[in-house]
Image 1 (cartoon, rainbow, N blue to C red):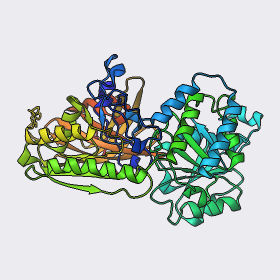
Image 2 (cartoon, rainbow, N blue to C red):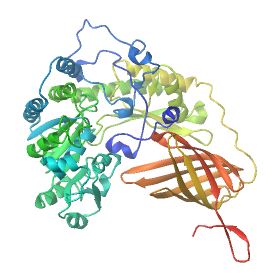
Image 3 (tube, rainbow, N blue to C red):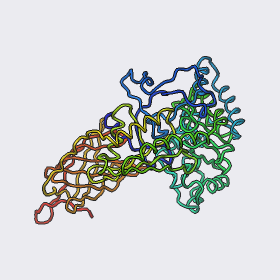
Image 4 (cartoon, one colour):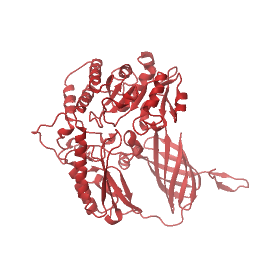
Length: 552
């Protein structure tokens, strides 16, 4: 299962990037001393310099290969690197005992002083912050109600979310047992409020300043005495806070992204009463959020990261990143057919420039997908951003580099390895031969059985066929989606997507058709892979003629 996940890494990023996707694997420890430009606590000059080859020994010792992160703050590649001052704070915090309620009270007061927000708490990640806000909005600090969660009978159980804000991370809200009320306009928003409404939620980014933006939803929430939570996980920390100024009750951040705090921490800022209730609904208290524990080390590390934010020269960091990208571009622009351009960030989330590199795969003998796979498989391993271009018929190629989480010296590693791959392409595995012959006929209704690594499911497939081209419907246990595919003789390949809540499930089927049976493997993106078989359904028409069922 692990190998199949590794081969399907390009799927999901955090927050607004979830629409574009991208998953990868583990990241090693720091490869060189962080610059003082991105740290409130510069590394002493006496500290020995570390290189990629000498770092990450703790991972190599268990057979895990570190990577150079040229993609960004993806949780699957361990987000960002914590600042030196954060590491120091976590280490010091680990050396004493403290009463947790007293600790969070002191931290909350200090976070309010530093950020200008009414109050603050530290959570076990941004998703944990969303869950704690939800439980606090439903149960408050009523211990009887807190103990009944997620049984919401007799309690508020609805959360209003604008359509543009539905995403994979709203599972943190649904896990409490809530019913999501999705709204598309102001009329639907107003009608959505009732005695069952617990809170409203907005995903920061595209849309939060539009017709159903934060200010509009916040005004409606205030009239109905309902809290509004904004998810700003990957954003830079604005002081004074832009979302609270727009009327949000609370705003949640990821600790291990732009703020460069502990990876397993989150930051929640906003109304003191709601946040203190959110803390009461989390560990160490025995409530729904007990499993979402945050430790004293993460709490003090997150406070240190927020303190450091007020001293960081973010404009200086941007200039440094741009200089790295200029260096990479200067090296690659000399290669025939290669063009580069730097795109500046738009918005507050994942605020970093991106280098786009494009070339003619036919002329250079390698595509973007080939380059990405090659740099990931060989040493030093590099995780690139997006990639396009695939043999044999999609030869217009490109990759991207995000300098956000590059450590000093990584830019030279990336530049050298890209230059080598484009000027001296590696020997590529030959493409599998495309089977020849008339395409098998698969039109009709099929019963699909999927055997997962653990568990199984029975789905349905409906195919319409025009020569080698396939369209149709994939019916899951609970939701359905369109499918699109191709037949090459008796070899079948098709892809389907299914929208379920805020998530878009992706299936990539490949297999062999033998009469009324077929089967093979299916890639499930971040969820690994599975084996599938299918049996064509038939029925007896009048006169005893057996025909496949056609899609209506």
